[in-house]
Amino acid sequence: MSLDSTLVGRTFPATSPYRVSEERVAEFAAASGTPYTPGGPVPATFPIVLAFAAMSDFLDEVGVDLSRIVHGEQKFAYARPLAVGDELSTGLTVASLRQIGGNDIIGIRSDVTDADGVAVCTTSAVLVHRGGAA
Image (cartoon, rainbow, N blue to C red):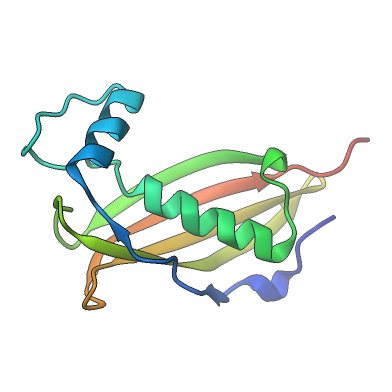
């Protein structure tokens, strides 16, 4: 099933607020092999936790099984560093969509904002939605 090009430009509802806690940051750091000292800076790749939640919501909404997705690329652009205690939400926008060899190449942007709606970080990713078996 190919995705419909009318998805380009569509923004999906923001995720529920997520509180960045010392415990969650330490768990993320341990799981990703990232050095972390309690009270230190939140790892630069931590927003993937929020972006993944937004991506999962998007895939559910458009009827794509996560098992058919290959993660192609990920970038982060910061307005400010994340901090323990932040309450963050993430909205996802489909930035691009093209079909190549029966696969959908989906460009997504996830905007991470704080409890006041102020931009904290923007992540962008390329997802490959694998086509059906030949």
